[in-house]
Length: 243
Image (cartoon, rainbow, N blue to C red; front, top):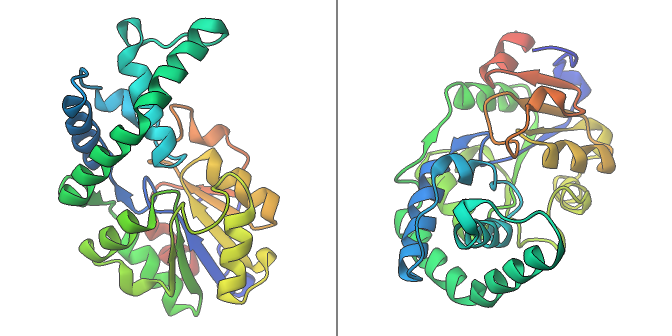
């Protein structure tokens, strides 16, 4: 850990992201998206490309995957009329794609994913030191809650809010502000733990300290380049830091 000093007396609660922070769900995304694309008679997308699309909610993920496979050679045009036309084609398929994606994701949720090493130790450390915990993710609530349960993590959290729980998603600060309200804590004493610039931007705007893990999904960018208060290679470092 660097920058931030994990002193439990500094915080009353922690808000923890899900995908890329607690659970490596890239396998679930890949299987569900590629089943969806097959249903639409479209070619598959590689996990390496999917990893860069994760983090902004299912709508963004699906539209990004559609645009990726419909573009020439998997390289979407970056601007102009061609990019607008491609986005329009992807949007026209969205309703059908979302229905198929939801069908497949709910069928395999958690089967191709794994809890990252150190997560359970870190959550236990937070709880043992009196912090109240909430999970806040851009993943739909109907996906997030069963995943937490399947991985044995649901018992750590008083609340679990998905990307459809509030009017806006991270990186907007609204979900963090509303989660702090639910926890009954002020943002300055509520630690955000995530894996990407989405989490950091939302935390900064909401007034929450933010700690990022170094192993998750950050849209293909180096996570240590993100404006955050600290970084950890494992949530188990929280236990060692507070010991």
